[in-house]
Image (cartoon, rainbow, N blue to C red; front, side, top):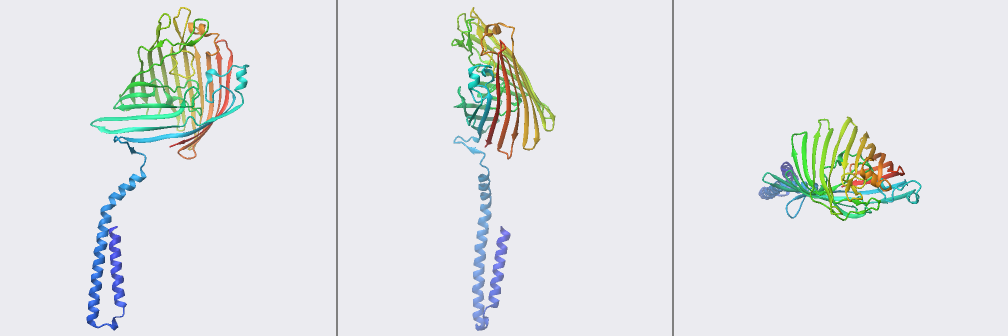
Length: 439
């Protein structure tokens, strides 16, 4: 900037002298020429002083202008009234499906698809559905450090709540204080990151979308390993029977203690990872004999980088007496004729292979399978209940196209079967579509 000002001044002076030299001096006396030249020099000196003042003013304001320019180009980080930085994020998501056979809902509900040969199977066949209910938005918060302490939080919402999956709801709402978390978020027992990618926003067999109120503490052992412990709302469950399969909601269910959950995560240098999880909780009721029992679960999941563009994801769960930690399972427990609680027990596994075909195209082949214990009191009591399942199987293959960074387009074929304890079968057979714009 200073060089430009000096160049302008020199150029102006040179042009002025040239003009003076070439003007009609012949008509002036020597004294008149001297006076005229003195006037011109004074005018040039005044002009140069003005140019210098402008140059100094621009130089002084340049850092401020640069700062304002940076603020205009960095609108990602904003500040709340309380001084916390926050980041707005979310997506606009449009989903659609063409269902050859399946449930009454648009999204996955494999555990309740109509049985073959029933009226409902015909009513739910060959239909197209679409919605934008899975659209979401949220805020990440971060307060300036207070001494050595870091404080933050998150609030995230969507329109995917309620029985019809069409109600506004809070997904996440929590605060963090160093290694502590208080609020609602994913259960510490869930491993959403290890579930094979699917177009269906409700996931499939073996998936879990459980978000519960909790208090969690995380501890970093080293750069590869960390531990997390939490006390979580165990959620009242579920349905009862008198031994005649006359099921009603257990209005007498009660919570005595929160669910205790532990998790160990390990990351390998090549990007692969493993996670082991455990939970233990008490299920209790005031129904009749005021029975109770300990529900528990154990899980192991992870991902393995088979090749540069090939990723394997897997997860295995064994659960007794609980439904909140894995979707599409049976009742958590039922009552026998003596009003004693008899828990369900089951195993579930998911497996998925994702291939990055090009930098913009990826595809996943996934499988989910649930098998209930058929040799216990629970199975004997629900054997003739057609809403309970001995086995669930679901497979899918999809392709996502990412034409530009914020946009994902997906198409997926999904096929599933449910089998009751009396071996009656229901089928889920459909094609899913999605278009997502992340902001």
